[in-house]
Amino acid sequence: QVQLVESGGGLVQAGGSLRLSCAASGRTFSGYAMGWFRQAPGKERDFVAAITWVGESTYYADSVKGRFTISRDNAENTVYLQMNSLKPEDTAVYYCAATLRNTILVHTRGYNYWGQGTPVTVSS
Image (cartoon, rainbow, N blue to C red; front, side):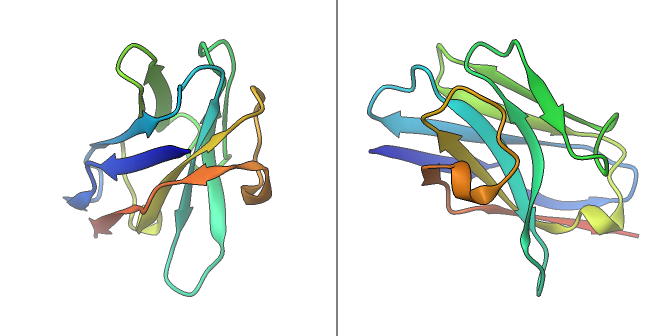
C-alpha cells in the first residue's frame, strides 16, 4: 500500500501562486509515475499534470500549460505542483495519484492510489 498526503492548498487571489506537495509513504515509492487531478464542485475529476518516475517525461492539461509545473523529489518521496498565474477557474480540490505503471496517464482509472485532496480557492 501507498499512502499519499497532499498539502499546500488554500485561498489565493487571482494572479497569485501556490505550491502543492504530495508526500508518499508505505511501500516503496520506486518506479511510480505520479499525477495531479482536480475536481470542482459538481464536476468530474479532471487531469492536471503527470510525471514519470525520474521525471524524464511530464504532461499537462491544456488549461494549465505554461502556468503549472509538476516535479518530484524521489529522495523525499514527494511530488510537487507549482501553480502560477492562478485563475478563479482553477478553484477545485486537488488530488495526487500514483500509478504502478511508469507512464503518463491522463485518466483516473489508470491510477492505483489517491490522496485525500487539498482545496484551492482562487478569488477574483
